[in-house]
Length: 136
Image 1 (spheres, rainbow, N blue to C red):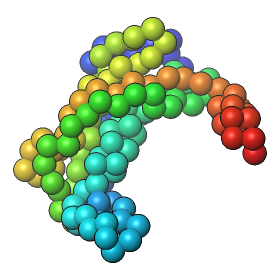
Image 2: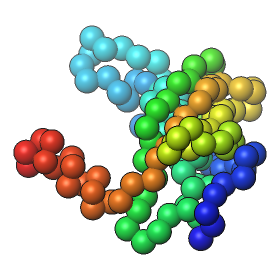
Image 3: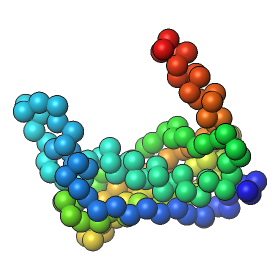
Image 4: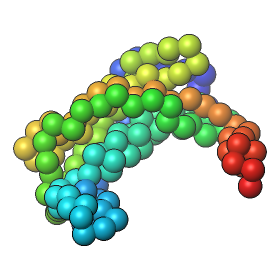
């Protein structure tokens, strides 16, 4: 375990777009007709996963990193069957938050970019707070 990330450290994940990763799969009714291309929510999820990778070395037992903020744009559509690669580059700390530049690419180039922040939190504290807030 290390005490800090170095500015410029990266994390990367790649996933082939499947039907369940598309905006079309997000529809809850026939009136919600979305295209069969990578959903923005899935792109953001890949960006978050990429950012979580370099943070693993910072975690102590009982801790995890969680997404706190996302400010991204989705620039281009990616069809089913095409790999998407998300890259997160550590920019530095903002208080207790870890800031990342995030980008997503497919065969045609850049499909999304922006910034993402993550925090380290105790797993039990997170779950207890969620349950208490929702009175479960």
